[in-house]
Length: 487
Image (cartoon, rainbow, N blue to C red; front, side, top):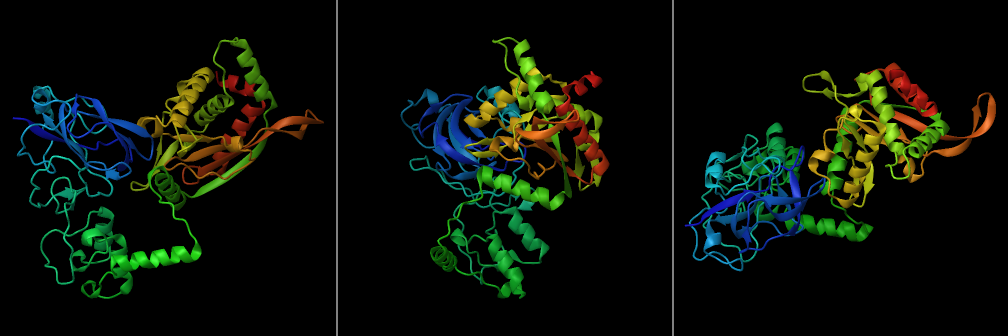
């Protein structure tokens, strides 16, 4: 008899709590093999093809194309062992008694013994233990034609230590509507840990609220309305969802506004920038530098390599200068642990660089940049840039930077005050390099000048350290031979 196994959306990398289904690669009833890609999802970091760790027949899919799913939510169910008795064109014969929506993944040891499960081909699943759920959880929906199974009885589960009332996966089945006379026992129709925390911090009893969301779901706006009313929670009733929708539509029609959802990459960038400005007391210093000799050095290095050798990019030379400057000023290769009230200095230098793509701004990371030569840096920067534009960067290539280099000069601007890439401590910005009148060796001349700006976390160092870092970078730009002093 075939065993139905549930495959959940795996943890795709640091800080990612959800992903959007872009394209299903398999249909219900189709036979899949171990590690076969089954769905293409878009996270806030990159496009990822997710392979299935089970082999068998797909019995159900959860989530339509364009729908966002939380990490840990069901992706699909697979009837393991049914592939031998059914063709690739239809579902397995007969039904299954397995609990499709609530089935637990087998232990890693059982998977290995059965020989039907892959290794840890992505972060957070495979033969390792499943990760804890993070972020908000969305109700999962099966696709039309999916094999149905009896729904599990509601049980008390938890998400990050918060009781959910909806079983192990904290994915809600049809949530019944609630009113002010609802009983004080049973599950509370809340699926967001943030909403629960807000209510707990302000003394709002969720069981007394009537949710304005789908099927009576309690939203953050409902809790905020209860807090703002200043009345007892039992006396607060949420406005009907249809009235709120009508009010929003009326305002939009009057102002001619266009609403763009802050989700996916745009949402993550917005959250990270807001957190950076909220937490980091940043300061900026800048200096103009004569980059004429740096451009000449780059031309000489490329000419020495021959016509077939890979070309060294200007960004690679700037990254090499930054790693040398960080070796002199390690205070800026750091982060602040706010909970422990400690400055954490980092020994390894992972340089992130801002790259503009069709999907928005991303920051690929060159790992161990301090160990790389200018040629190695150039090759890695070119590879990561091509992957960023193709949308094929992995989550690991987009996380873990310790210092960021931002060449906004490619946009034709001279200067900027960049927002620090949280939780880093500094970012170097480089403006466009253009011919300008400049005093060189006591005479007025036309030189190629750029503006360098350093935004730094004032908690990790004072202005003297930051100024010393920036001055050293400018000296290396003006006289690249300065780098040879430390060789």
